[in-house]
Image (cartoon, rainbow, N blue to C red; front, side):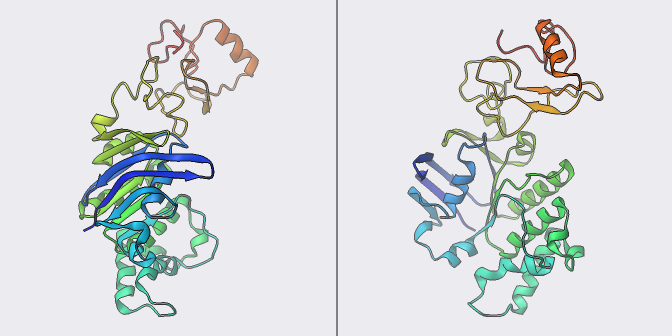
Length: 318
């Protein structure tokens, strides 16, 4: 088992301070989700735990300074699923998963029987055995995500850090990935995942870290972190409200389905205290939608209810 401890960690990229004075401890057997808006420093913090970016303060893995550890030793302790799923080389799935054994191999050495067994176990746990002879660049997004997860499992490290493993996946594949992360934590591994989907984070994670502006805003169980105040989409004075414009630029929160054919969500980057954060894109001409808005109708889901009577989508400017 492995533990990770952060003590006053800060990261500056160029001239911009991305992470400020973060202290936290992560224990084995738990699934911790790191949530927050785009640009809050979530991925940078995850990379700092792996000593992939220079950081102030200290990151300790089992009491040892991560930055001073040999890279192969650190790679054997913490497996990493990076952000993005782009593959450039036409490798078979089995060979791609086998790359996870590199931290255990000496330079220019061949894989052993133990390495082959580890690759088989990883593909079985990620449910990609039937894809072993497929070319990785020809896989779908969900298949590719499971293969990259299998590559991380092939390391057989006691800790796993996944940076936005749900990006670009449909809901079914998102649940599959979260099930795999949950299984790893239940088996005693230390699992940390950077997430944007608050519903899945609340459902699967034992603990959530809410980060905004490079600082920890809240730390605790999902029920403690995702409070009504932080998740309010209406008017409020909380600077830490998760679904306000500053804290929810990365994930749309669907509050109501709306009529059939109403169109998809239109993301609205508006200052704090303005009207609804998200609205359906109407198939009507934009000028017609503006005229409806001037008549005082709710714009939340094109429900055409007077804004004063629409409890779900009451304007935040009131």
